[in-house]
Image (cartoon, rainbow, N blue to C red; front, side, top):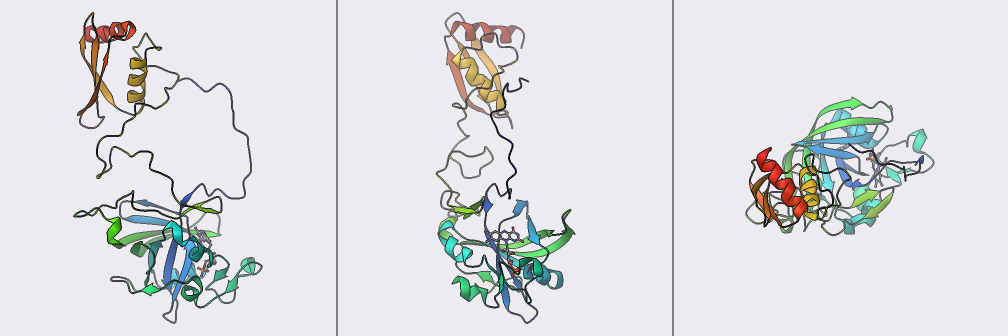
Length: 289
Ligand SMILES: Cc1cc2nc3c(=O)[nH]c(=O)nc-3n(C[C@H](O)[C@H](O)[C@H](O)COP(=O)(O)O)c2cc1C
């Protein structure tokens, strides 16, 4: 593999590494039964498990240690002001020393944020009514972080609620084009931009993604003699994205190569070319694949 020649990046020491994840509102229950809602963004999901990064000294963590049920509510981007209204308050009384400078205790955070609790179906803490996507969850494991300031909280999602306009009719799929998560990136809020593509595993995409205009990498298909051929470049890109190919025909007049998905080998498209370098390469593959 070729190594990029020059490093065109600079080394920096940023105060946060929040590259950009959807913000969420986590709701837990206080000892008196009232709900506590807190904004957060650190999370990832695999299967039915949601892994949250939560500060150790928050009321959310204290509640989960005693009552390990929660709802995780995803606001749409237009709700950013409601989320931000919660950025300087904690449900913890007294406020932990480390937060005393920039946080105050607030017992009624739903009211402060202009949000309404909505009863859950499986767990005790309520959902956030205004959030289009709401997960009910049960904590299955909490692991102390390497840094004692945070916990890794593994949550099994036991129910998912979505506004109907986000759901592809007749399916359980979220319409990714209808959903606008609130993206939290380097302490700024964003809507997502326009769709630029999809993965081949999308259940609702109209077709396999078109990868034909990916800028070619420096290396070419292993057997290719004509790196300058546009057709061969297309093949390089296809291969770089895990696709497979097969030469169907190579005559004096032209060559035809079938491009197939990496899973199952189904043909997605064909390259047809009369480029002499491409024909020469394709003919060699037929003789010696
Ligand atoms: C946009 C945003 C993202 C945040 N992300 C996290 C996070 O991922 N984990 C976390 O524990 N706190 C996060 N916080 C900070 C908590 O909301 C804050 O510590 C709050 O006081 C917790 O409330 P609580 O003490 O009532 O649980 C975030 C705050 C904002 C505004």
